[in-house]
Image (tube, rainbow, N blue to C red):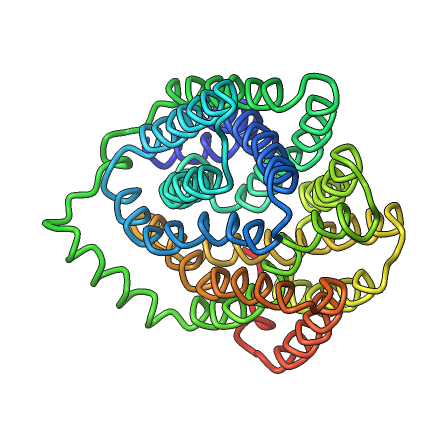
Length: 411
């Protein structure tokens, strides 16, 4: 009888899975809400302080606690109710934005305030990321994962479309008070949507005797998984040359090179989401038989487009190139996450997701500092992007020899 029930469960369409739909709804409000906040914080920092080193520190401050606490976040995701973790994460972000609004109303906001709040957002990210990615395969079957991950990416990637577009418009029409108020409301909606997800107790709580035992078990599991090692080593170096220059570079290019305003920044950042959304839609409609080959090929192409972006001197050309880049990144990120989820035991998913994020982004805080320091010493952000793009291309070409990734086949 049990086998008959399991066969029936396999036939349940993704959008008739109540829990998964609620997770999508939560992500739909959470990610755009965060991006509305982010474009507001970026433009506020650029407006109140002319020192671009402080702008880089905005990203550095968020990345350090995220990096330090991701492993803890993964262990907590494996031990406790993932729904509760996501609720607390979104609610805490809403509270942080409320604090920021209070500083703005009192006309006492400074660069230091923005940096401290960014660090607090980083703490929240460290717990929400592994919980979100560990919850998806709990709610879906293995053969639904690529499609489910594509829809999750699709929902998430709407954020760089809706978020910057809405944020830039609100800054122009209502100022910073308006943009941060909308961000707060969106995160509140996300936090309450996730409450209605229902999980079986045995899927939500781990019975390991101690967090230290959890950590050791997760570390040993990751160390023996050659695919995990191959993926994170490559991602470790790629993020150093991609995350810092792109995250810091685009707003500075808009402000200093293109002489643009908040709407101009929204245009470029919206193109990020458009490219990523189209990529997610494509991957939701097809099944990759050899995702490893697609992933490596896409990395080579990504490096080339990234290099070309550094030479751009026009706003709309840059927006088009950025859209092409984020379209390509979906053919890297979705296969990567799907490969890891399919080869990982469900009880280890939270730890493996946090391990991937921790190791692969290990150089990101350094990347922010190095990028900010190079800019402070007078090196143009365009030069930094060009050099980084060339290095990414070379790293991707080197990994053409990686048989572990290239040989992976979808289930």
